[in-house]
Amino acid sequence: MHPPDTTTKSFRNLKYPLDWDGIFDYVGFPAFFKPFAGGGWKNVYRVEDKEQFFKAYNETGQLVMMLQEEIQFTDYFRCYCIDQKDVRIMAYDPKQPHHLRYVREKLKYGKGLLAKIKEDVLKLNNALGYDFNTVEFAVRDGVPFAIDFCNPAPDADVYSVGEENFEWVVEATANMAIRKAKKYNANKFNTAWGNFVKSASQGDIIK
Image 1: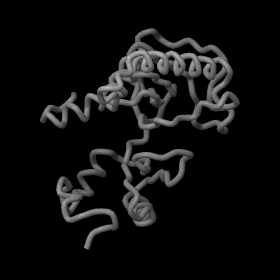
Image 2: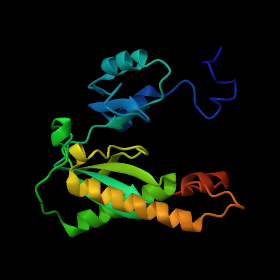
Image 3: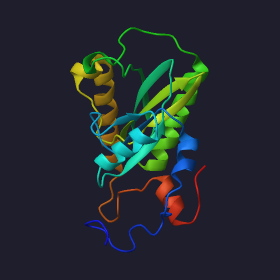
Image 4: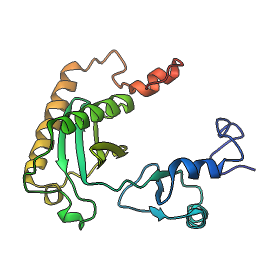
């Protein structure tokens, strides 16, 4: 027997049984157990030990979940990336109520940190092939960790992101639409896969 909408070949790339102790040793506790895609903190669990993990695991049914190390951060950023080239880095505080999470006051950060974040945002989005996405970074000991980067339909409401960020998104998205309209060719397939999929299909691995 196998889950609905799957076949006997659907899980051929997975090992069974899973090495749970090895996974727990690698990720560590506390950790976050969350869907690979989603939003609004739905079905997101903070787990502190094996017992809490397996309780959450049994509650999530057939949802595709991932276990992620908890990063105790000093700074946090949410970044727009449009057309895999335009990046907007925004200070963000996920611990605040939703309408206060985008930090309005101008804070100073090291140029090296911001350059590294921009580099990683572009690398991720070129790999994934997303034209409209957000990437979130938690900074620990000066190192940015990408902890959420699959948001191809992100929040862009002026009342939550703020007027400056909203205007940037509108401008960048309009410019992307113009560029793509100019490049459109009715005689060819105009959708492009990200580098990750293209490379993987050729047997190569992006590092």
